[in-house]
Length: 120
Image 1: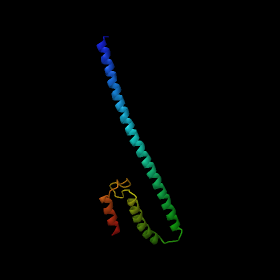
Image 2: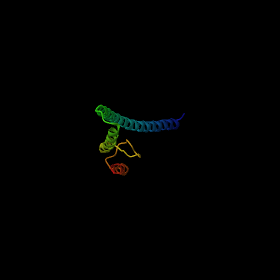
Image 3: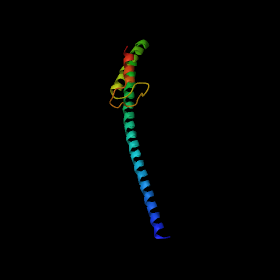
Image 4: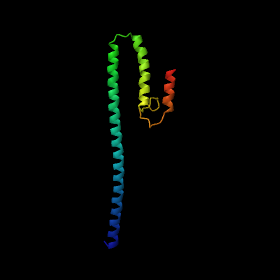
């Protein structure tokens, strides 16, 4: 092997190392994004579980008060609307298009349409 071939091999290896370094950087960025999303979803899941537990406790407390089935049904309709409105105010979609996903600090026309339709 002459010097030119050795130099070319070293240059090729250097280029391959550069490409691997770029791929490693891309993977690191993607992993960081996944970890952030996982943390956000875990936090959201924890919050929703607390809300569910609270809702279950409230429902159990109301059922023990001896209301009739008809009264509970009327209360649940109003309560359902209130829960959806509260979820929307907390920053989550309540429309059938993006239900449960976080809003990006902007109003959703589908959600607002749904809220207005259920008020009537």
